[in-house]
Each structure stands twice: as C-alpha cells, then as structure tokens.
Image (cartoon, rainbow, N blue to C red; front, side, top):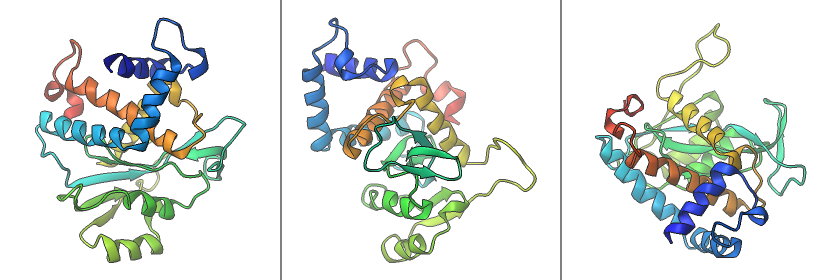
Length: 242
C-alpha cells in the first residue's frame, strides 16, 4: 500500500501518463485499480478530512475552520476535450475551471471541476453544496471575489446555509496586475501549488470523478509534506503558517 501511494506521488510530480510508467515502479493496473476503488468509495475524501484536521491542529488551529475562501481559476485541456470543456471568455481560453473551497491555511474543503464556461455564481452554489454544517460546524464566513454576487447563490444560502455569511473582497481601485488581498491571497497560493506538479499543468482526465480524485491526491501530498517536512523546519515554525 505504501508503494501505491509513493507511485502516485511520482506520477503527479513527473506528469507521465499511465501507459508509459517505468518498470521500476508498480504495474499500472495495480495502482490505477486502487485509485479507482478509493475514488468510488470515498476513501480519498476521508483521507483529506483526516489530514486536514491534523494539519490544522499541528498549526495551532482548531480542527475545523471558521472562515473559508472561494475561487475558480481556469486550466487548459488537451484537444480531445471532454463533456465539461468550455470557453472562459474572461481569460480567453478553452478548458475547465478548478474551483476550490479552502480554509485560511489553504487546505482544501471541497472540490468541483465544472466547465470553464459555467457561471461563477452557479459554480459556487454547486461547490458549497458539497460541504455541510456537519462537516464544518464552526464555519461562518465565505470569502470570495465579486463574481460570487449571484441571486441563485444568495437564495440557496438563505434556504440551506443561513449561518454562512459571504464576504466579497474586490481589488482596490486603480491597481493593476496581481494584488494580494487579505484572506484571498491564501487561495491564490493554493492555486499556484499545482504548478509544481506536471500532472496538473493541464486537465488531462476524462471523467469528473477522476479529476476530483487527482486534485485530492495532490492536496494529500501537500498536507503530508507539511506534517513531515523531511528535514525542513517544522510546520508551526514556517512563515506560511501565519
């Protein structure tokens, strides 16, 4: 089992396809079958929840967050496309979005990978629907950008998540380029992390469930690195724990 997880980490960092794995690692079928089984029975989601709580406790926080951040950057797909492939007019690209809901440490709470052409408010509604008050009983504030202003989202929150407030942060007037904002900069950092994983430079997966599982595997790797820094300073001593 340990070899399966190590092989998955190698897959994500190297970006190699399943069919071209070296003979030094486990057979493709052995690993892919485990990935599919854990994807379908919810094992990856359980791993994320357990590691998220341990990561927060290690950082001196409560196991569940009081605030979360919402964002939806887009990523390109191969030419073969897929059922959720769409046009992102704002970024002038064809692909899919990678909208996440993360806590204030940048640890993932929910994953949803719709078409890039899906309205931001609708995507936010679908994403928040995957998180229940039972999962995050202390959650009270969702930090998002101006695209989160949506009548359907407001109506859904009033009906199903009345205790969750929406804090919209806009970029200061007159600023250009990347402007870090309080709380939301954590989300931008979380979306920058996939750049270190060649598997995520493009969205190559065909099935939505597989894409979600790959994002969960990547965040599992990040949290394990935080909990066991491998010779680097302990998590609570690093500046990014602030």
